Amino acid sequence: MPFIPHTPDQVAAMLAVIGVEDIDDLFDEIPPELRAGELGGIPAALPEMEVGRLMAARARADGQPLCFIGAGAYDHHIPAAVWQLLSRGELYSAYTPYQAEASQGTLQILYEFQSMMTALTAMDVSNASLYDGASALAEAILMAVRANRQCKARRVLVPRALHPRYRAVARAIVGQPDIELVEVPYDAAGGHLTLEALAPLGDEPFAALVIPQPNFFGVLEEVEQLTDWAQARGALVIGVVNPVALALLSPPGEWGRRGADIACGEAQPLGMPLASGGPYAGFLCCKQALMRQLPGRIAGRTLDLEGKPGFTLTLQAREQHIRRSRATSNICTNQGLLVTAATIHLALLGAEGLERVAAACHANTRRLSASLCATEGVKPIFDRPIFHEQALGLPAPAADVLRSLAAHNILGGYDLGADYPELGAAILVCATELRADEEMDTYAAKLARIIATRSQARCPVEPKF
Amino acid sequence: MSQVPSELRYTKDHEWVRDNGDGTVTVGITDHAQEALGDLVFVEVPETGQLVAAGEACAVVESVKAASDIYSPLAGTVAEVNGTLADAPERINEDPYGEGWIFRLALADATAIGGLLEADAYARFLDD
Image (cartoon, rainbow over all chains, first blue to last red; front, side, top):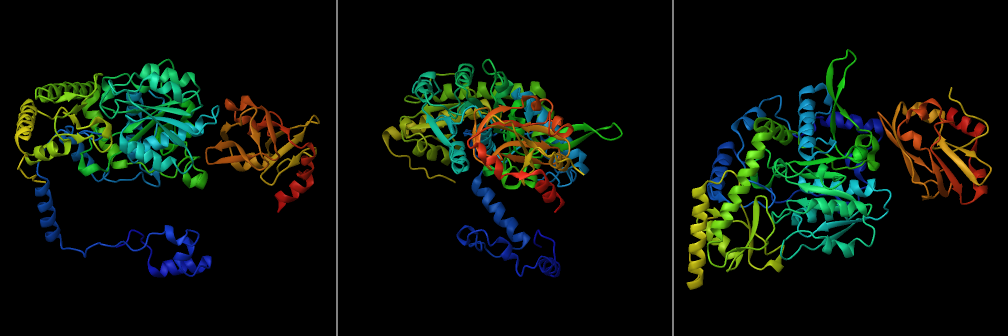
């Protein structure tokens, strides 16, 4: 059954009323070359048993490898209660309902999610989530350019040490409104953003500086001085933060003298499984002064006519169902189901639980890095403090080493070569709280053997996946 | 019936324009516009010194139901903005032609004001 429930007769009746012959005529203002044709390559429908067999076979092909990859999505423990509660009929929906106020429970969850995010980031306002961290950053950039009216510049400084996919998504989304993203190099020794690198770029006006904390290399940025530097030049500051790290690090709302203006990031580490890359959820928070520029849905708490507390969608006047093409954003669907997962996850962990998770990740990654670096030629690339990821240089081509590790059922890390060829043979490793000491020791032992073997002959083992 | 003071000029976008006689005009939204929008909760005024073209969106008024652009009726430079609206947007509802003014414009061409609607023409426009 198609999603649209109208019968052909109803459709014909509606078209007759408005005097249009065919539904396609309603879309004739969209040029033909932009319209999607029939989707090709979709196989015929299969019976359920057949699909079950197919999926089981594919799951076997994936195996259950030990995961030491982070790079933006993290393998955290998710309490069983999270997805058990989530599968209740009242919660099991991807969307904020259209008659939102009739679903008080959903709105209350969104309100609690927003409250948790503002508490974590120390910002004043949060929206009800966006698609993912990368699109949240793009929206943050659009917001900053809209909001920074003192500075007419449509130029935003973006560190090269920000997640490469986030940079690509931001470029794709903000390129059309003609916003220039200027790449700021990272320090070769520290892997971080320095005032020296920024100084030549700060002579011309810029609307905002993006500060990742930690950055893609896991390295901690000097957020205090970077924030003050940008704000002293009339620019806004956008913090791209890992929500788990915020349990230990100073929140964006407290960076520098005035705090960052906007904070955004990926909520995946809060109760969402890796799931081959999604769906995840993005969060976007800001200072009160910018709240009317904040796109997306915002749930608010209010009193009804009888004085009873209730929840409502608020600040909608600039959304697309009212402002059409002049809306603050036309990509502001929230991730209802995943936000519910994040809210339950955070509620179960509590502030103290989240802090323990963050501390365990940090300790595990340090331990892992130390044991991997016991192998000759394996060493940290940057000397700055890290959160729960570390870039390591290898004495052999990274892709080969990772393939050999995969043959041993170990996902050894993220190959930095494609995004950062200047680093040579380099991988990004991560050990979350899920990784046991023995697992890290296994990885270190296998790596030592692979490197040793490689220095004699090529590894003959073929990968299993 | 909404008020249409006779000494002002108007646009079909429901802005009013007061000729200050010194090459500047004051701009606001009409009684009809404020009534149609309902209770205003936020006004985003232009920047002082901002150059605007005639018909260019330069301010936003927001009610609980809608956000609408305010178009500059004439070309010029924004000379002054009503900063009190930031804390008291309801002034536009209470006194659209007085305390609820939005910005003052130094005209690029002082004669251009003659091209705007007179009160009776705007009143007829509202009737249609």
